[in-house]
Length: 275
Image (cartoon, rainbow, N blue to C red; front, top):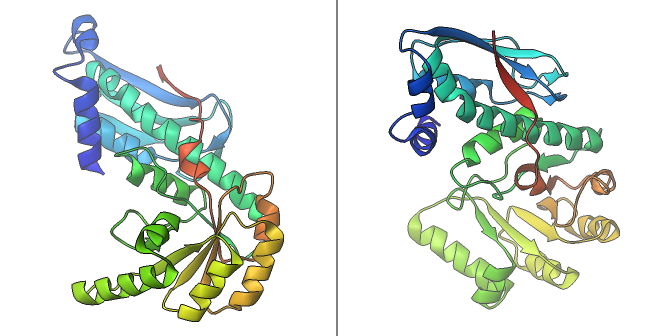
């Protein structure tokens, strides 16, 4: 995480925070508190702490709450104390992380509650902000969701374009198994199907760990689960939102993946105030 934070500081600070350098005496000390202006789920305290410490190790960061807590308007989240210039230099980046992460955690918690007692697990996707995936996926976990693959390297996920470019489901699966054997790799294999016809081809072929049912309506999810009959993990994806999530979860499909957890989220409103 620290490497990403350093890159973000390089982007934001450049050759110096010239406003703070110009306005604030070098020896000035200050203290500030982060206050919630909106209710939600807190996420990103550790990341915010890392930002302040990277900017200036003399800053004392004191958390008042914990990640995963549900916060209300007016709650005090953390206090920072130290060189005033450094507190101001770190302010925006720390807020960018904690506000966005809290927004993701808040939305994730909302959807997890909608799933209720179903055995279904809520997953994120790779639809993340470039160079912020580690933080955004962390926020999903804090909100009570789970992570799908982190990147292209830790799982085989054969999607529609792979199937089409490979020439079909059998061809794609055969090629994947040959590749993994040749490379000496052991990776879980998931394949996306768009119809019952494709599902039957996968069931006849085998050699997968999970089947993704893409854009299947709820009644077809139930029929697909009947046909799969527990032989493979199952995942529902596509067109699933707050309006229909509970209905999809009622099927007890193993996983539901929702890209909107990370790519369509409003940052939580938090504000750093001098004390």
